[in-house]
Length: 140
Image (cartoon, rainbow, N blue to C red):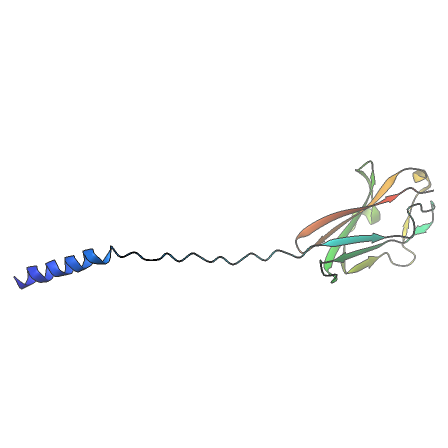
């Protein structure tokens, strides 16, 4: 008899425990950190460089607060938005903040490009983002 009373008591207590309403705590998710913005700036002395003359160009990569970034750079020449040539045979440069051609190795526009509306394109990758920035050029 004691066993049946004890068993009945256990079953009664087990059944009563399931009716209580508990407040459900919302799960807290931590926001995923997004990479900072990537800003690319192309600086050159003119949009109308002379053919067969050195044309120094500077490419800068910064984040939203203006801090320099580690980046890679590839350069192309576009005509009507289509690639028609590669600068330095498509070489990929690694740089921090600012990139310039070495003195004496600046870009030289060929005579055949005179009067053609071209674009110099810098493809910069930093912090898992890629930015393509163009600079209008019409060699003279």
